[in-house]
Image 1: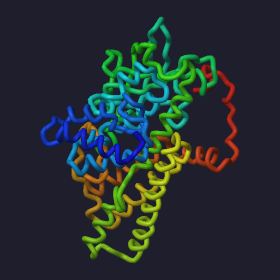
Image 2: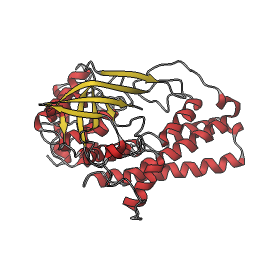
Image 3: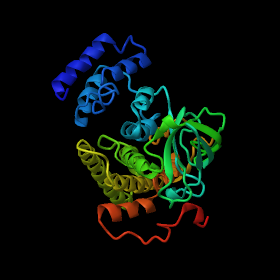
Length: 393
């Protein structure tokens, strides 16, 4: 099933058997998964057909023209962009069969339990402990900046299983049940007024060993799969020309000529070009992914995404003048997704400040690009061979 014509025929058969106009949304999504049209590059039986990744566009275009429902990817982005690739690469067959279908259909939302109060940029310093008791692991610790924890059914979790080893070793990767009675989720109110993030406290949380991804102590390597995919999903999302933040500013620019100045004109032109370059670079990166796994180039895309969003949102506020200082709603809510383009300029300006922190801080990503893309010497480390339990904290 590597031919575009065959995929088109298979998609039309799905549409004939499950007409979007009369088929309940969830039933249609389940049928699409079973037909191998969820992500065509995944294996047969796991929502795919083992076809080239590039042929997904053939399926998507056919379904879109028929008015078929999608799986609301913005709401389940952590599951799609981070959990699924990791489960596919490191999960057992039972784990893949159990988790990938409800993940893709959106029946089960996922979150990411990585960052901690003392291990954010230096994630490998994490201190959440997992102790084995027979076929079960007992987890205690605290995680922070956890998007969607308040709606999630499952979480990808890394915890320290051997404190006698250096910090990048002795870490193990798990799937955590967010309904376990030992999981407590508390909202973190942000500068936008919302509580989109959370802190999560883990007290005696029990995880079966069957929900471990990768080998014991190999969690850092497994986590790199998640992090590389995360940065691609954040910084390399597919957009049309003038999509995203630059589209909102361009819309105001055309509609409100009285707001323009020479200086703003120059900045608008420069940022429009940069946004278009970033969009085309993202397209090239996605084409490279067809042949393999995401690499450190995704870090460069995410780095540029954060800078551009902050500069574009700043330009928008300046362009609007006094109007740009208005803020429509400071209500403390716990949203299911981040909507940059559906809100006002003030929201975009404030929310964009988080782009240089989430998904890897810009400072860390600069190091990754320097060392792994440009081949520059690594920064010296004095903790490389020191057991984690002996590190100063």
